[in-house]
Image (cartoon, rainbow, N blue to C red; front, side):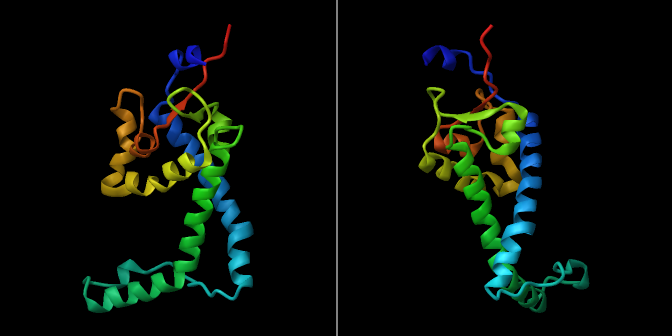
Length: 169
């Protein structure tokens, strides 16, 4: 196993971004086909239009009251989307595939320091930590462009790496 670790070819930021774009399509389909109908069947009502930011000249009390009401209506969908995304990535990346469908399509996978598959709990921590990576202009994601092993903040937290496995000659 140690020979595989020595041959790690860390996935670039661009390749990881492209994998996420592919996953975003899958997650959007999942939301449209499964999550929204399920929540509607439970009786959750959703807002029928996005929040109209341009309707307000000032960010005053009325703006924050209206925004709060809109968020209250959208909360079930926001929570279901967060849960679906976290489980999607965690279950697939901890499986024998070691990759989400987007990563799989591009030939990259998530591994631990020894090059082995991550346990579900580590994947769950990794994917829940993506919230931290998205704070402050996505700096946690952009860390992959400057860290030695092309790790994001959530990779560092979970002790994970995203690699493009080197095939044997």
